[in-house]
Length: 194
Image (cartoon, rainbow, N blue to C red; front, top):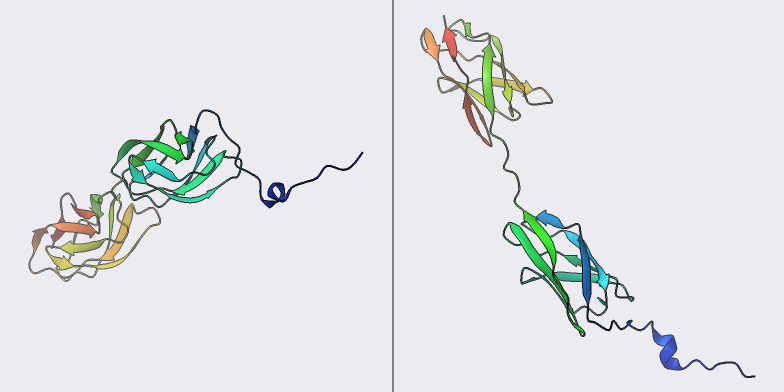
């Protein structure tokens, strides 16, 4: 009995496995991401081999790679407005059923809040250390009646801000305002120069 002959066509590469019903998309993982896109996701299914197009809500994604068995396709997600969109894969066998992908808007940074200042009064010459308590105080600047204070820093959690009171123009109560890149907060009761 002679050995089987392997044709040159069989040794070139593994052929794409045919899927009799066209591509079937089973999952998009992860199934959510930022509205800016640019993240990588994997599509899982059957008959996805030779994918020519992947659409996220009608917007083309960039195909990065696909396995020869037609089980996975890796893509870079395009930008899109927030919300859930259908994802489809097109091959020579047709277009798959849709799977869902959700675009998520970034959470805006929280503005600072200020609940108290200690001490709440001091000499008109300034120069006394103060502590403002609140939230999201990291990177904040402080003014006393519009005059900048010397800020020494915040604690690691951003709930305490330390600084030195500037000199005041006259005795009396003045507003104290903390400003960060995300907004401003007025300290209740302000500061009283004596």
